[in-house]
Amino acid sequence: MTDTFGSKLEGNIDIPQAENFKGMSISLSNVNAREWFSKTREGVKPWAEFFNFGKFKVPKSVAPVPKRVVRNIEQFQSNYLFVFGGLIVFCILTSPLLLVAIAACLGACYIISLKNQERKVRILGRELSLAQQYAAVGLCSFPLFSLAGAGSAVFWVIGASFFVIMLHASMYITAEEAEMIELEMEEV
Image (cartoon, rainbow, N blue to C red; front, side, top):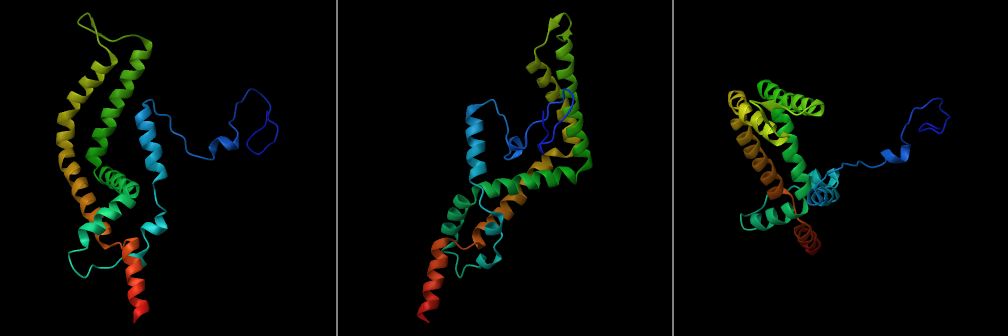
C-alpha cells in the first residue's frame, strides 16, 4: 500500500490516492439537484472578471440600466448565488443567538439520527418515523428561531443581497457596451 506521495505504508490503513482529491465532489441523492449543482458550479465566472473594477461605469442615463441588469444577471448568475450564500454565512456568524439556535436544532436532529440507528423511537406505544421526528424538532425550534431573530435575519439577507447584486449588475459594463465605448474612442 502506498500513501499519496507514493511511499510504502505498513498495516491496514486505507488512504485514498491524491487523484481522488483533484476536484470537489458532492454526492446528492436527487438527480435534479445534482444536475443543478453541477450546472451552477460550471457557470461561475472567474472572480477576477467579476471584480474587474475597470468595467464599472455609472450609466449616463437610466435607459440602459434594465438591459444591463438583465445581461449581467444572466452572465453572473452563479456568482450572485455565491454572494447570496456569503451574506447568509455572514449573517449567521454575526448573530450569536441565531448561531446557537441553529446549532441546537442541528444537534437535536443529530441525536434523533443516533437514536434511530439503535432502535425505533416510540411515544405512547406508537412508533414515530424519522420524518415525523424531524418535523417535531422543526416545530419545537420555531419559538427558538423567533427569539433569535431569524425572521429579521432572513429579510436582512434578502435586502442586502438585492442591494449588492443590483449595484453590481447596474454598474458592470456588458460586452456590447464595452465595444460601443471602444468604437466611440476610435472615432475621436
